Image (cartoon, rainbow, N blue to C red):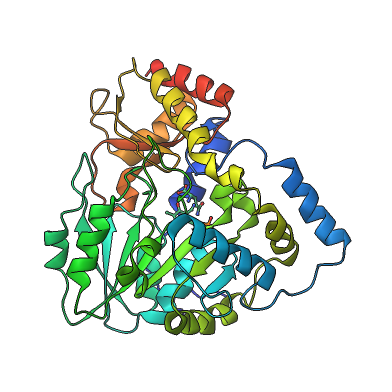
Length: 384
Ligand code: PMP
Ligand code: GLN
């Protein structure tokens, strides 16, 4: 059978995600993989023990659809402590199988045919397909290279009666930018008197540098009342392969979110929820994560500082952008592949995060790696 002529692709312009593509190139070329964002070190041994124990104790069947209440209650406490915001574990917190699932379910629950969604690009690659699969139309605002700041007056001009949602992401993948309190206040202001929903991707909330504080939309009551917040345990506990996260939203939005979530996944992994219900009490592990990654950021930047790459600012996330214009004028996709093949370091070309494949000769490198990996990679980059 051949279905290529009979199935009308819902995503005709989409291929395989760049993360799979570059990781495959890395493996094929035996290169150091600083492409896909994941740590090359293990998660905390106590967390693994708690998951094993939960399995041994028989927590191996479906969790409740919105997640284990014990974990939701702890998340409510954590959110109140960190962001002074109150979320009801019963109606306003849902445990999900990862941030990507949450983003899709949030968009699917709220965006319909012809609705416009404002997307600040470059952006994480799942946003636009999720909008398009649900009949929505992405409306792009381009963050201005090289500082990737937002001019909210320009964003405001994109809002009209069709605007259903705006997606923000802080700390930001791939740029490492963060939104300040003033950005949030400006966002709040331009959304006044609209019924636009904010989808706030905060999966890197605990990876923010130089003593800045993460400005969750949860801190801003007038924003929070229209926001769906996406959080990921994968980033916080070095467990990206576990696909676990949670969503915060006011009850009316959460009600719609859950209607979709229950038919995409129904619920998330039970033993991990049991383990996290206890492990989440160890506050120092997420409170010290920024310092841990700041050291890695600084180390990687220092290691490549004398190279032909230009090191761009990085205020959060575990991604460092490097501009290679001094080395070559090749397209970033071509250069990323050649760098993997010839110099054995894999990265992500940033043009893939733009609808029009905007190319500033910038590659993204993930520094969530052991110092040894960073040293080896930098040694190779120094020779380019
Ligand atoms: N949003 C952003 C900005 C990300 O970088 C990622 C992934 N790494 C996700 C969402 C998805 O998180 P998860 O791995 O929990 O699906
Ligand atoms: N978020 C990770 C990144 O940006 C990878 C996610 C994925 O592989 N889908 O690299």
